Length: 346
Image 1: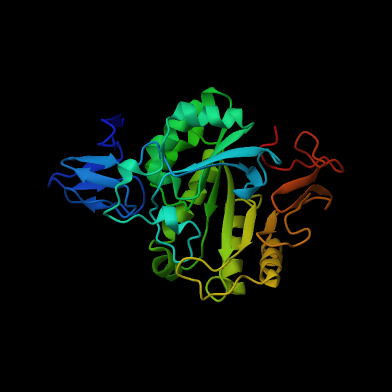
Image 2: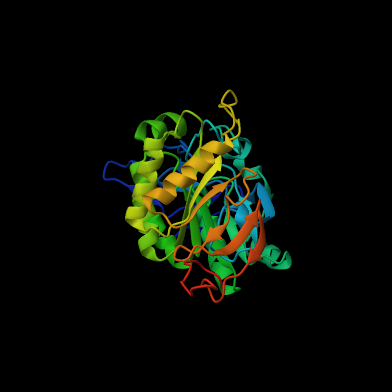
């Protein structure tokens, strides 16, 4: 287990491995950073000190908001409910299009011991309950990088009757995923592309660990949704969209797939926003490949975020933006033909 040191020293992590040669490797995510003494990992928030790996952001909350659960986006868990959303600084990706770059991209010189506001898990869960939230979302940056704090919050949330949601790039190690799964209600994983060159050049990562973790979380029983942000001319070809949809069908055709619109940000301000027509095209491709639930989001498209029964076509949930306008589900089933609509509806 990890253990806390004093407030200025951070927190020791259990996600490290010391080799026979004395090298220290971080086992938190698929990067597997091998660190020299005093060096930080690619996330910028984990540092080797002697033979130990230290988290520099335990409880240092830089974002803390009450959001509709649909904003995550999570559409098949407690629709219309509120989720208490938190983040620390840092990320293990370096996406050129990151909309939260001001908090996700951390330099090696950043003094993270004074970043954000100090919070403990009891305060986070208490704040969620006071705000009328049904869940806590670990989001805005990659929550893997503040796993120790997120995990403690997850345990406290479970004890007090709240659900836990990760909004993730899916790049955590298999060991972390297995440890997290029993206390996680749902996860939305960004499948940013089906091209390893895109992952390497645009995100500073690789595709395979994300694919592996989509399968792992689905098989673990955690409710899984997947998001693909369509960047014009970079990951929105018909061929690539068909590949993504076919892969998701091979895992489970009931996985909700969110195809969402890009807006110029960070280092891609020269790229225009995603046309609405591209989102509708991607939605149709997903449906043609056999996915039961494909949502065109982040754009004012009438009906693009609605849920229909895959058996009879009846409208079971209507949404606009982040608001549920009508919910006709009956005990998680279609009111017309009684087909079960997969999700967490209680």
